Length: 155
Image (cartoon, rainbow, N blue to C red):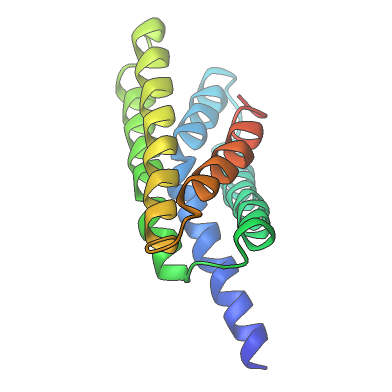
């Protein structure tokens, strides 16, 4: 029973963290609803997709880390390490909400924030779980591989 509650806690926190990380896409979906005069109650779909997407990406990343490094970070370590991605998502959502008309500026700033957030997240994760090991670089490379394959899919 303890394992089920631990998995549920991981799922719930990663789902909520995914909503923060992909908040820029939720704001984009909001503007699409506004432009198309749709029902605002359909925003739940964007929230669901954002949360599930981050859970799936995290599961793949953690699975690869377990295979490559034979170690898993704690939930606290993982959430702290992905803080730069959350800040990039919040930055993107603010840009989409307030600078929606100036698309070239917004897109460039969003993408720069996301790629910097990704690199920082992988470096922090590698540093935290590989301290004192020789596998620091392989952790970063495995993380970058997973996220670079999965982040652009819906973009």
